[in-house]
Image (cartoon, rainbow, N blue to C red):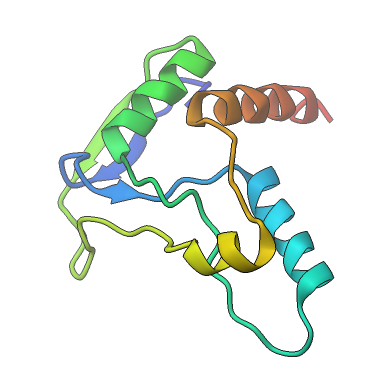
Length: 118
């Protein structure tokens, strides 16, 4: 995206996904390791689905560039929306994802630019 190369977007961009900043996921994994005795299953995520076209707009803002989109047909079997039900993780682990999408993208792009020079 930063180099101006087109990105593939399947469908019209209305599909919604549970985009979650990695630090929030790590916090949940660490909490699970500290609190679990035996075998438990926890869903970790933001639990707030965001449209793909909204994600792309936020990436454009964070990059300071216009993203070039290669629009493709919806993939067979794709679903309109997915997200994590984090109720159990909140109740048992105190899991509370807190990184807003724009903040997470800003942090990620800063990291990417610093580390892509290596």
